[in-house]
Image 1 (tube, rainbow, N blue to C red):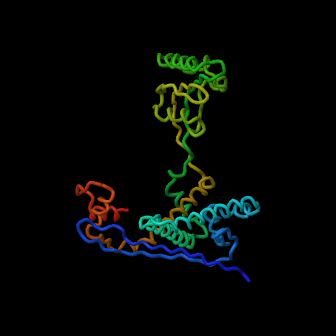
Image 2 (image 1 turned 180 degrees about the vertical axis):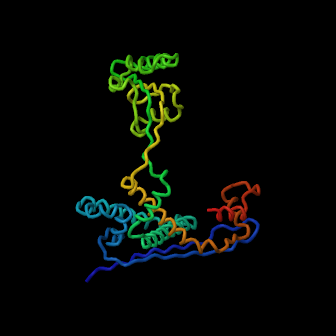
Image 3 (image 1 turned 30 degrees about the horizontal axis):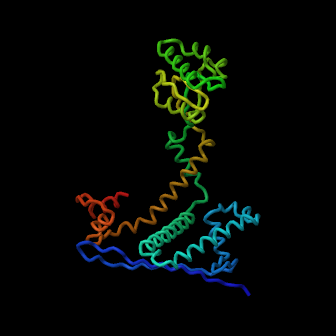
Length: 325
């Protein structure tokens, strides 16, 4: 005969705060969550069920990875240890006088409802998902070609004073400043690059690097080139390779993607747009109902957190902000 276990969680929240000048309307909130599942393991007073394990895996392990996790006894052991510790501490929390007070209950109530809302939203969004988004993706590609371009590239002149063994930081910094001063005085960049640059590619390109994606170079170099207008000598910048002296030549606008290149991106955006519209429909009728603030509620909230009431935060202002979302 199967061993059945019925864990049940009950949450009750009673409003803990009263308005300073008027009697607040007291509201009780109560929700219970329970489930039935086969017992997996008992340790002391703590019982772990099959459903507890499913819940842990759902929360922490991607679906495709779960079989692989369960192939290893040590991983199952770590999961069980985690669950036992969690449920043990939860039991102690409930048993300790004054710990699970009204504020804690309100937080637990919020966490439960936040997860329920996510569950409901994802269920309805997944149910509304289309078999194919190709048609809407192609329409997006044809009507908004500017959204489907390759990343821009840059052409720039570059000199590297390398951080090599035997060179002190002072030496390489001094040399970088000397090179920068020569270029600022009007010397030809490519000529100076051939003379002093430690960049291995300088013998092939005279220091001119073309069609480079900013993501392909060190962040410090990409940042200074983004900040400096074309044709202007940039300030020397340090990276793990040494000091860089640069001049941006031009920014090359990215070419338009072909449909084959753009299709994965377009279909992903079409799918995301559709899912967003489904979520909006879930809230449309709800937002049509007026929001009614309890008398004195805003003043009570501000006073609870020590916010000076200068008259700027009002129920009407909060309501307008809600309507604009």
